Length: 164
Image 1 (cartoon, rainbow, N blue to C red):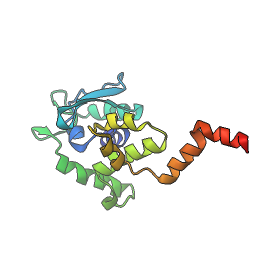
Image 2: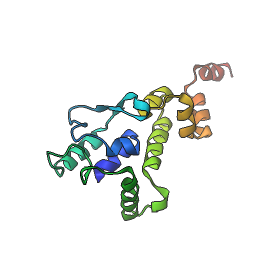
Image 3: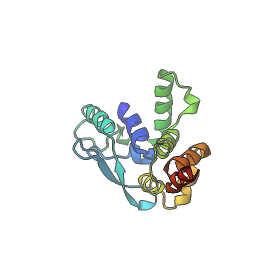
Image 4: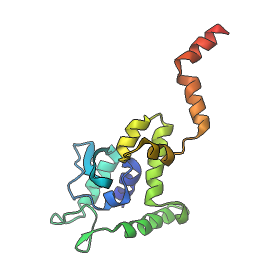
């Protein structure tokens, strides 16, 4: 189950993309995967070292003849079943289950990258958004952080400091 969490939070995958990953989509020597997301658009998704390690451990428990990384019955884990699994893991970790979902983890991925200084266009690409406006709405950046960034990083700030 660590692989589920690491991929949701560490790569920002949509729930449907996660549960339908082929068994060998994520390789230990490749820090990204190419997937076909919403609207059939392909995108490059970075996969953290932690997520790749968790997937490697998880894959040992998946029969080699299973086509999906997260198998269930004759197919793959359903998106509907994913949410209760995530909530159960949250409850076991002492997190109120009503405060977490696969989409909340995707949102946290995006928000934390932006707070860490990620470029909005790069994030748009990672999330698979066709329109930058979707990314802007999706990532509710704290306005105080934006003001801090301007005051810390804008080149004219230094000019103003020197003039005073």
